[in-house]
Amino acid sequence: MKLKTYMDFKYGVVDNDVVIYKYTGNREEVSIPDNIDGMPVTVINASLVGDAGLSSSGTLKSVVVPEGVREIAIMSFGYSKSLENVTIPASVTKMDSSVFVRSMSLKSINVDDSNPEFSSVDGVLFNKDKTELIYFPRGKSYTTSGDIPEGRTEILEYTIPDGVASIGYNTFSDCFLKGVTIPDSVTDIGSRAFSGCCYLKNINLPEGITVIPYDTFKDCISLTSIIIPKSVMKIDHSAFEGCTALTDIAIPDSVTEIRFSAFTNCISLASVNIPNGIESIESNTFANCVSLECISIPATVTEIDLSAFAGCKSLGCINVDESNPVYASVDGSLFQKYGNKLIYRPHALFLKHLNK
Image (tube, rainbow, N blue to C red; front, side, top):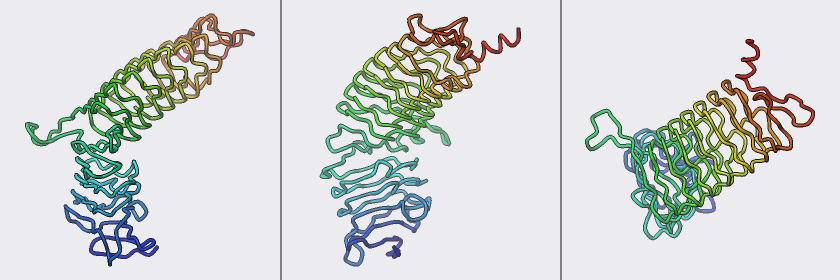
């Protein structure tokens, strides 16, 4: 498609509808036109031409989307260094979850009250009936105003409103919040919801959540502890990968599945319980947990991928429940129960024997 230029906008025409691709100007406040040459502007798709995002100028702070636009496509307001406010009209009924990704200065998403699909509360994006929290603007997680000394930043906390049942995909990822309060009404958390929240120290997970999805808390490097509710049945892959400050975690007996790499690179994790009911310990589950000293295997585990403990330099003992039908432990090492075959000798135990 050959792009055309109208004022500072690059656009294309599809079936007599205008698709806005880029803003090339340097103004701080921009209102996207509602029509060009008599044709309505119906789509904003700033991800298909050049760098992702509507503008890479570094000056754009506020965008007003006009009535008539029906769709805002992936990353259209993403990767902006300066964007602070976006106004969404009633006509927008389709908006990708990555629309605002990595726009770290974004403070407010304002949705027209008559929009049938979306709503906003204090600049935070929700679905219409406010049962799903879709996106938390990253610029709302810190402040440099008020009584804060010049050049300093205060990291903030956020309380999710009562009545919210779902936290969406990527909702808080890479934000700077130090705490998030989740109400008991929440029963579903999307993948990557809190990934990369580098200041997040602790968080409560309410009863009713059944799955901790993949990458949920990945690279939350300040997270020191977390209580997993008894309603959780599955911890998906990489859910806590890279939580380098996590020292302990209590996994309830309700959990029957822990996927691969769930705790990879949790370098401060000194102990962990594997609940009765787990049948498989998958690849890299505890890889590079260099502080992990001992682990207990319940009777239900019948399959262990040996890479699960790769790089666990402090691991000195593996204890297996005596009623386990497949595995046994002898002096801290993992053996095949029948045949007395050595399967795995923990790293610290190996060094101890080596140095004798």
